[in-house]
Image (tube, rainbow, N blue to C red):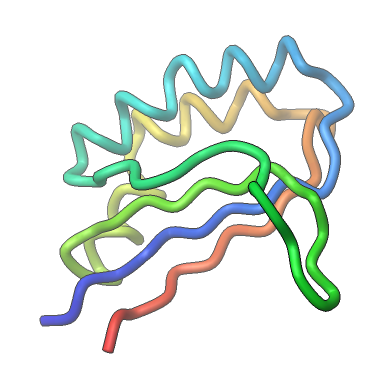
Length: 97
């Protein structure tokens, strides 16, 4: 089974306090579900059409494990802190080759 990478990019953050409350719960929820946080922050450099957006990369043992982590009650509790559009983000699960 191929590893999977959860990649989040944040297009905008309208409520930094809500994002902080989310992050306080999300990190522990995702690591408890088997995720390994590989990188998070503003890119050191962007190329071509890249955007200078906060990016998070989390490794999971499979796409199914990433999906289960996303659907978990602990992670969904974290997501509740982002209600009312605190952030505009893109989340992708990419399977390793």
